[in-house]
Image (cartoon, rainbow, N blue to C red; front, side):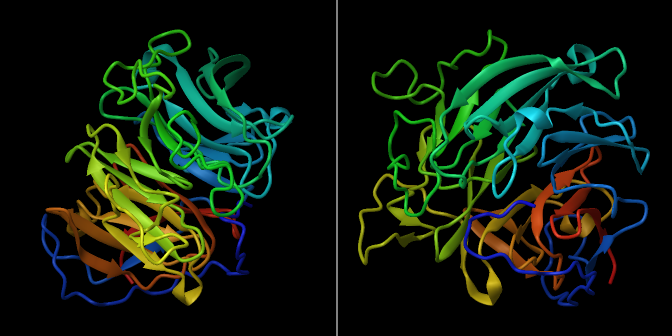
Length: 390
C-alpha cells in the first residue's frame, strides 16, 4: 500500500461510521447540505484489489478503471471486478512505499482514438515516466507493447514525493503533478528551481509527437526555464482536480511536518508559485519570518492534530444523487481518514464540514461518468461510493 509522506503509518481499519448530523450549514445549490453522508459498499468493490490508488470512468458504458500500485489497471464491468487486467506493466514498475503505477488519464477522444496515458516509477531506478498506450480490438484489454514515451525525469535518489496524477484539463492539455524529488525539507532545492520539472505542475500539448510545449505556458521559450512547467512551488501534489463548470483548479499539496494545504486558482492562471519550500501551507517553512511576495497561499490548510499526516485530495461533487453537496470540494487525509468538504466562494473556503466518517487509509478519490464520488482505501483495498444517509 502507498504511504505519503514517510512519517506515520496508522494501522487504521475501515469503519463505516455514521455521519455527523450537523445540518446548520447550507449549500448554494439544490437545497441544504444533507444531514449525513455514508459509504456505500454494495455493489462496489471490497475484495479482489491490491493497493488501489486511482479510479476513472472515461465512457458511459458501465466500465470503471482502477489503478493498482503494483502496475496493473483493473476493470470493473457493471459492478463486477474482472479477472483479466486491462493493462499489466508490473514488470516495468518499481512499486512500494510511494512508488508504483500512480494514475491513468484517458484521452478526451478516447472513444475513437483509444489512447490513454499512465504515470509510473520505473523498475530500473524509480525515475518518473509518463507513457501513452492504446487499447486493442478488444476494448477491455490494452496492448502493453503499444507504449510510447511522452516524458521522463530522474527521481532515483529518494523514494518519496513522486507526485503521481495525470489529468486532462478543460483546455484539452495533459497535466502532470510532480513532487519535489523526495527526502525532507526539499534537499534538492527543486521547489523554486524553474529549470527542474520536479516540484511542478506540467502542461503538455500531446497532439504533437510526443508532445509540444504550449506557447501559453509561462516559461515558453525562456532560457534556463523548463517550458513544460505550468505552476511551481509544489511539495507533493499527489492529487488535484479541475472543476469544469467553474473553471477552477484544486490542488491538494502534501505538507512537510506541520501543515497540509488545498490551493484553488483559475485553471487558466499560468505561472502560479505555491511557495514550497519557502512556505508550508500558509506558514513560513523552517523560519519565523519569510518573504511571501510572489507566492499564492492556500485557500485552506490544517495541522497534524488527530493523527493527520498527509492530505488526499478529491473532487468537486457534480453528481445528481446528492444535490445538497453539489459544488463542494471533498478531501481526506491518508493517516486520519476523515471525510471533509468545503465550497469555494470569492476566494474563501466556506461551508466547511467534517462528515464524521472514519474511512481508513485513504489513498485516492475517484469520480464516475455521472460525477458520483468514490473513496479508495489502502488498508482494506476497497472502493466505496459516497452516498447520502447515516
